View: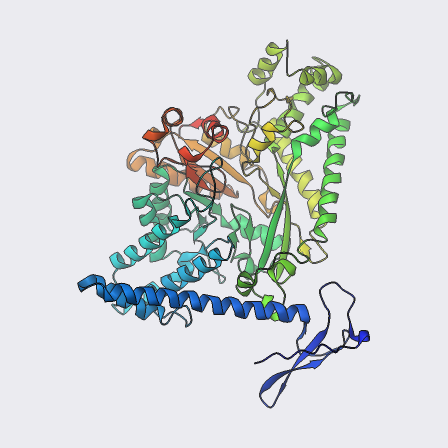
Length: 627
């Protein structure tokens, strides 16, 4: 229906907020929708939209018009190609014409139409500058394939071929923009597989299997895949995931969906929506199609530097009489940052760059006539993410032992040593590495420091889970920022856990490089001592596993057992990257020999040759584990 507006609005009808100029009530008269002036305070069952809301809705319609123009250009080109072709090639073009004449304008009826419709609209919103993930592709496409197979319309081999084309098409973004440094596969084409649906039923189906088979065959790293795993996940899902993992590249990671769902429901989401969860760009969880999401990362270690007096040449180390007073000073500084986060979150998503195409894909944007960046979706989330947790906890533990328990030196003496980057104290630095068992070795005392730190951080964030319409779930990550922090003066300090200035420290919630010395089981046990239902926006563990230890069927069984143990211990997200450090060193020296060697970075994978040296060194520096 046509939306009519009026420019002669009396001044008293103007509304004071910054998004509304005039209000109109949509009424239905004689079967037509018409606009009538509405008071800002009017109590009515009819939807009320602002002039800005009218613009949002009209922009959405323009986007749909643009999509149809783009579809017609494809049809014209396919017709031209068909006219120049013969035989099977011509029949293929004509079949595509027939499909595009229906979708995406009409709901798909077959598996092939569903795949085409999904790709077409996904690619179209990409062309409009919006980079959202794909999500639960097996839940979306599985019912179409099941119906086609039952009716004899398609074979599994034909379906596999269609999904392989989908994966190959996803590589077209390579070279679209400069990604050297952090890798060439940051296209946020996130895929989730398996897990339960909104009713608690297992999703894993033929599409799940085919996707994993295609990835194993083609080894395309441009779609980061996460598998939602629970205690009842079919073993074939885990085995097929292990086969992909064994090829290296870190393309497949796993969620323990039991913990994710529990954390989301504790945070306040209805169970049905919690079961819908997918990820943002890496592993931050959200309710798809209903969430305007962003996260706010920060370096928690720099706050310890500040408390110790390391950030200024003139500052001196405070004389904390005991460890508890030092720890409390750190918590006070962390609380200041969390308070600052909450103050900023109050004004988050209040207008901005409009996304009318994307807004149509998020529930409530049309109903509210509001844009994605203007509180249109059902949920608005700004999640704080603390980084370098392992080094904060390890440093606190080292200070507790050296200064307050063993009285080996005073805190001012230690701070002065850190100021000079351990100059003249190399023996002490090595002593710290050799004598102390840090996070990642299943050592109760050091792991308890991590647990205490994470719990206190979570408590601070949970004080304000929601305010001013913005949700604030806690998360833990670095997402590669450990590289930038190692190069920035204030972040880049010698640390009490024995690192020099410029060292690349812990990634995400993994142990600090080289400190995890007792094998992958010990690493997982340390990681699993944390209650992740209190960190509902996620935290991850990365493992670099040597290829020799996962060879043959026994290797498949080992990886499956590793994933099952991770779930049974109730933890969050796990990357397994099967790589040989010696091979990575050779690839760094001779990149021309390994153009397609993929590695896991953070929430994405990339070809090793497209990383700069800082990022390559970070991957090489991860501890080589044998399972």
